[in-house]
Length: 235
Ligand code: ATP
Image 1: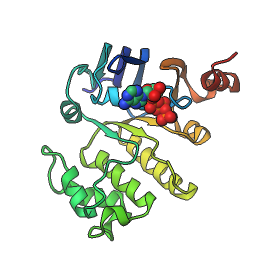
Image 2: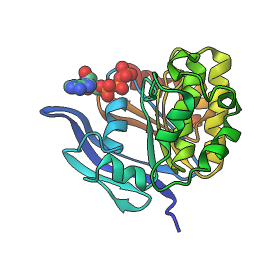
Image 3: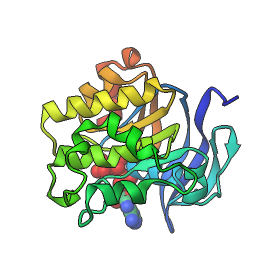
């Protein structure tokens, strides 16, 4: 059986070469829950997602994916273990069609009929299979990016600012898709600029300040003081 904590970070430090960004970061993302990762610009949120997904190697600490210590595993091995990163800027092939994107996103270990299932989840894509991805609207492109989590049947999904630049109505649709994903048992770690919206949807909140955890708890426990401390580092 899968452990309760899908993703576990224990005393993770790291950054880029000699530049330390993350300091002794520990928290878990439970199965079926949405954890909002908040913090001011430069706090280290993207660095944390990159480290958790294996694009950056931590300098210290451990990272467990579905109970297995994958601290030094490649991004591909982590993907196979169930982890999927939806990066900032979406990570889709803009010059290829939607169908070609979907085909490329199906991992080797998944079956081809996953594409049909995913189109059920994202009806918006059904009529656009032959459209070049880069010519779609921002919201449609983001839906295509999110489809990767469903195609790979990931149960840990890391999302970096998926609502960036999108109209509020589209953001609502995207958040509905994320809630659907969590309802299937996936663990979501969500970096989000819309703090209020993120808090409304999240089961837990982790706030980073200068690369360290400044708050880890329930959204209801996060009062204004904690937000001010997290974002401004005062109080
Ligand atoms: P934002 O909300 O602005 O995206 P963030 O919380 O995601 O911020 P990061 O992008 O993780 O923050 O950046 C954390 C720190 O790491 C910053 O000081 C940034 O300048 C630094 N940094 C980011 N990318 C690199 C890189 N490739 N090389 C060196 N330093 C980097």
